[in-house]
Amino acid sequence: MAKKILVTGGTGYIGSHTVVELQQAGYEVIIVDNLSNSNAEVIEGITHISGIRPKFEKLDCTDLPAMKALFKRHQGIEGIIHFAASKAVGESVHKPLMYYRNNIVSLLNLLQLMPENKVKGIVFSSSCTVYGEPDNNPIDENAPIKPATSPYGNTKQINEEIILDYVHSGADIKSIILRYFNPIGSHPSAEIGELPLGVPQNLVPYITQTGIGIRKELSVFGDDYNTPDGSCIRDFINVVDLAKAHVIAIARMLEDKSDEKVEIFNLGTGNGVSVLELIKVFEKVSGKPLNYKIVGRREGDIEQIWANPDHANNVLGWKAVETIEDTMASAWKWQQRLRQKGIM
Ligand code: UD1
Image 1 (cartoon, rainbow, N blue to C red):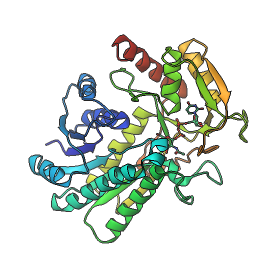
Image 2 (image 1 turned 120 degrees about the vertical axis):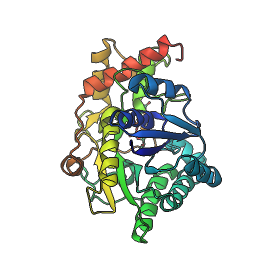
Image 3 (image 1 turned 135 degrees about the vertical axis):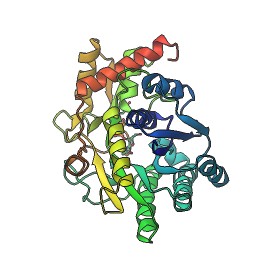
């Protein structure tokens, strides 16, 4: 019988790509999502790709009675992948309580309900934001955790600590914490992708929306950083590569491939790419020049960060394989598909 996995935030950007990979690997998926930053149409995209309609529960993970009832309705859930969270850095500065409530209470509820429902493991979506501005690059998992620069970043740090404390208290669960670098791109089918509501805060949706004419021009936040071309450097990781790491992590916990109760992995490519370089890649794969201007730095931005992914490569046997060109081409194809559908 297929193993049942609960995916919180499964209609979101990384969540939806992970649902597809889980289904293709033979897992049965139950999505829980409150649709606060996504829409139910995503289920259709998932179903088109995999041929399997995931079960869907429109619920908020902060609602403990509702989550208790969900575990009653779906007996035998073996693992959880927890994506559901608020994720806009700037918004978190203005609405800290909302961020602490959404991001922390959700995890507390899931952890509480795991042992009583015999759920063996939880994969947690963390971020390279926990490293702050690194002293050295590439950065590995042993690098120091720096004080968070936003409530959003703080929720990731606190959630990691909550998991560690709970497991160390003797709770009968396992966890794998995945620290993502900068996920970009979309499924090659263009059936699912990143769908930001309103004006995008992140670079790639802003680039593709500018490319298609929704935005007039991209503002590049700073060209006076201490980097070769003066713009910030990131480790842009293909979202499907990222999704696949979750399937490996779930199998690792459910099949007891490790004796460790909590493991932490960086998920990145190991290559730093600058903002200006990424714009050039977009221009190459789209065949059109991008309208952009250099403006001042954005407050709170990190100058440069990229991963040392050796631990994930060697221990999980996972590696990012997609090229940056193919990844940007997938983001562009998705943007064009949204236009065709009349969504954007
Ligand atoms: C941020 C968060 C990260 C979070 C991620 C996804 C921090 C330090 N990082 O990553 O934790 O997981 O968002 O929400 O809080 N840029 C432009 N013009 C734009 C948009 C972005 O030049 O219009 C530049 C930024 O200055 C930055 C780079 O592009 O140098 C990437 O920005 P973005 O996509 O927002 O991701 P991060 O800030 O790296």
